[in-house]
Length: 100
Image 1 (cartoon, one colour):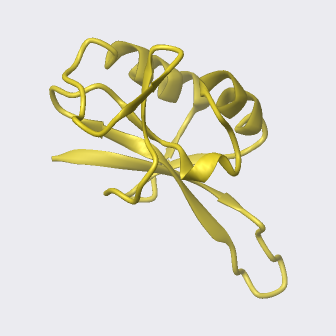
Image 2: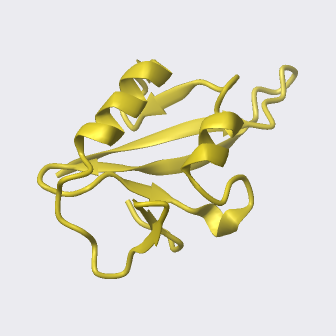
Image 3: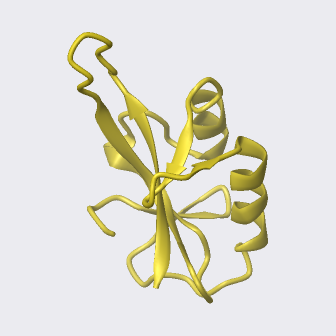
């Protein structure tokens, strides 16, 4: 079992509509696995950090997580197992397909 993390973009104040972007998943015993999202928003962790600078991060249950806590959790999970279809970018695990 794991926890997915998301951010919202293109939020419309009039109708409340937004696009939810899957950032990745934290699973017990596994490395944090980032969602590459077809490289539409970022191509590596440094670009993702910059892209998320003014965005809110939430878990799949709706709880907000601070950027400091999010990145701390990512770093703590770097010694876990790897996914078999991962792409390694700058030492971090990414998946470029839908996953939950």
